[in-house]
Length: 105
Image (cartoon, rainbow, N blue to C red; front, side):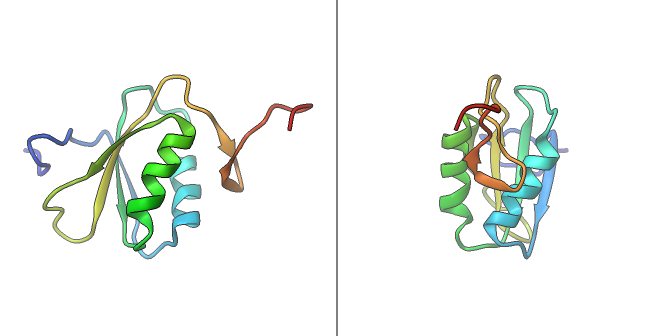
């Protein structure tokens, strides 16, 4: 039985960022979605007050689809996104910077 709002897709993957600042959360998110198939729905648990701004901005930068907050999340704020085909990669240690191929900057 799904615990999500009828308009919010159930997660294929959940990333728990409880207690993490957004930069650390994005590093964890980047690592955990590495290799995920396009169309994968990811729910991100995020307690950082900046998450409602940072997650959609990061999705816009990378090309992933931000689906918005998950209503009625029981214990902490949860946000949903969908992995996009052809999303732009980010640097391993710097989630706000595109991962440029060598020789380009």
